Image (cartoon, rainbow, N blue to C red; front, top):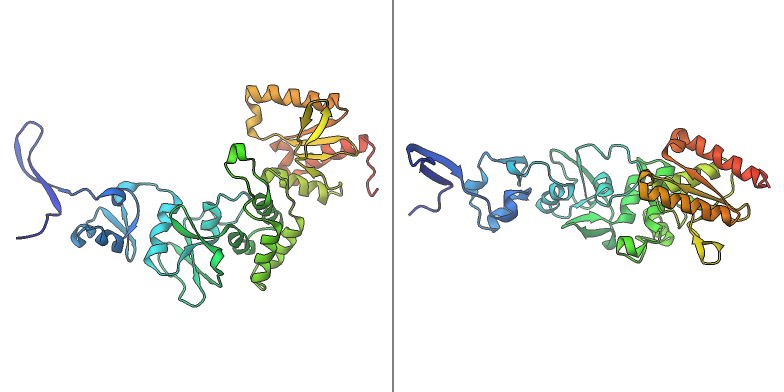
Length: 333
């Protein structure tokens, strides 16, 4: 007796008329119908080899199958088979940068290539559509995330340093070390500490890009809540303005405390970056109330928008500088 057929056959249409056999492939079970998978795990799940040879399954690489029906799928699902089909493989570099949802600009991170790393004791991965990497990995530098192995956040920061600028590396470092807001993020601890980042650099001396990473680590500060806040801080300091405090609660009146993005308490100057969400009607009302609170407390609030951040934040720097000079700050003082 032959085994189960690859095909579901039908000899009648909706009117009950016979028109010969119409071959339709049997549905794949569960995730195999809609997500990329490995040949080996499909066979282990009981899917026949004949079914896995069907033309409705793409074969981007040996041992990997992608159903035509899955369409566009997320990065983790695309990477997963490649971390399974070859031993000691983990998503890394630009792919890990995207998986961790790092802020900042990484050249080439939007290319379709998948980035996969293996230890330097084994062969580099060479597969179509994959950029293979090799390196030395400590046990805590490979973690599980979204169902696949991936380089840790701190290791990913180091791996990407070769292609990133110092400012953008600082943006990511600030993101990693900032204390979260539990009511919005559901976590209570930062992703990393300055000491964690320093230890990562000490572990891998001589890694390409490490000199830029060390400079970025020197510039990193706890307190920035967004990439634009970090870029604004760096632009102000680069222009010779004092280093501001970051998101420090500031009493303005009895029972009134505000937390400006950046602040200069000596001059009573607060600086806020207003992102795209500040155009909503409700937010506009809150922004007006915030500005009034600072005014009643004797502070000046400098509001910075996306427009001010263009061309290396020249307009933002000029706006803050004018306010600081008006409040008695002396350059070089």
